[in-house]
Image (cartoon, rainbow, N blue to C red):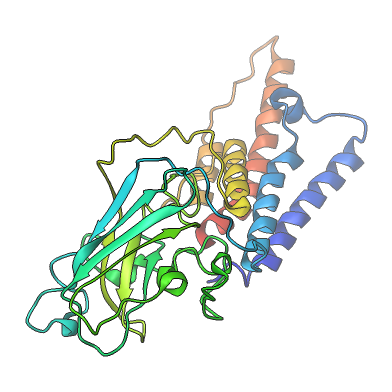
Length: 328
């Protein structure tokens, strides 16, 4: 199920949740602060805001409002990533007697950090009579070598493959569409080498155009995937800088990460692979509450009321949060 087709429903649910909380709070006690807010410093409505922000942000992203890719000008100098093609082709009919395209693709930042120098050295090219496109794909190659598992091209600005890339305006192309920007691989010769400056990819981990955790895929013109390989960091005489305070070139990814972190702090959402709603419901329901004792009824009532209010807010937000997390 696609998130984009369900965003209006999710936004409506989240908005209704916030409106209901606001109406309930104002009608019950317009000039007072809830017990849970006094104890935690966080209002019930604030629990909903990060999720609403995520939904709105993702809606904007799906509508492709991110614009052109900006050049990356602070790549870490000396950091090198290399993808070495495997011995056997993924598409076996390309080499019925075994074998594969041989060679490697290297990426290293330019001397001033602007862009990445891509160097390609290939041999044993298939004699197809047509040139071969190649791209950086969004996911790494799994252990079984399945090139289809690398999913689509690296495209953090949601440009899409259509219309085709215009090499005269590379900033408008997908970041991963290397052949669209720099030319395809000729197959009228056994070997081929090239080197060029790619301005929009990055060797900095915090950037959306980062290629180090992704793969290179070589295709036939009909999009059949011949072979693929992961980019891996190799010894280049430099260490990757601390990126804990670095910002991404994509405002969408940066804001989404921030909102996700805020939502996680507010609701303690489990990670993917768990039943978020069930886990949170269980976690809140099983949280021990203080028992009443003579002479301490006032304190106990406050704590119990606070926990009850927090429980209601957490479970309500978890329903919306779980929908968002599992549809991404």
